[in-house]
Image (cartoon, rainbow, N blue to C red; front, top):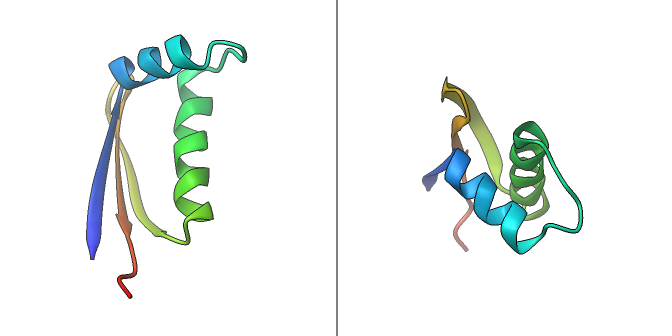
Length: 64
């Protein structure tokens, strides 16, 4: 099954507010999200930057 994850500037701001102990750039936050998908054994199909600080990640997840 394919899923879509949209990451925006607002998501990044929420992350910084909740986990402010380690400041991260937007790019580092996107990389963190990609790493979490990898850790969960999902397959990233595409990463698209729509505009400044908006990213769409399409990934496939296995259903058992």
